[in-house]
Image 1 (cartoon, rainbow, N blue to C red):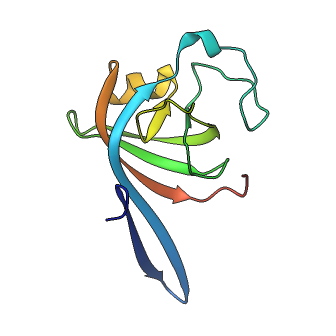
Image 2 (tube, helix red, strand yellow):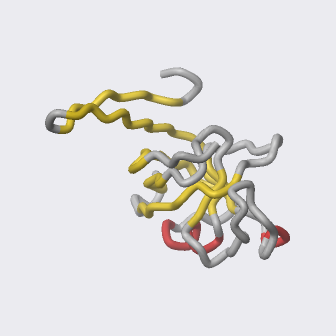
Length: 118
């Protein structure tokens, strides 16, 4: 493990795929950011299935599993966590509710598909 991230190389038929799994804390994006522009250029909506990440490219689809509840959902990375972000992912309210995150929760994230953004 390097900085909480585990890189796995998986072979899928003739093409290779890299999957990134990371464990840490999920937080919820503050409602004060509703309607504001995200780093991807999209408007932030609390009812979207989106998240912010410090490291993953924009447009990356990530499965987030709450380790307490066992529930999971897939979100799209469309923003950057702030410099003071203490988690591996900052979830929209809708995504957090779907997996039972209240405030913060221990989660495991797995990249489903990689975006092409920065």
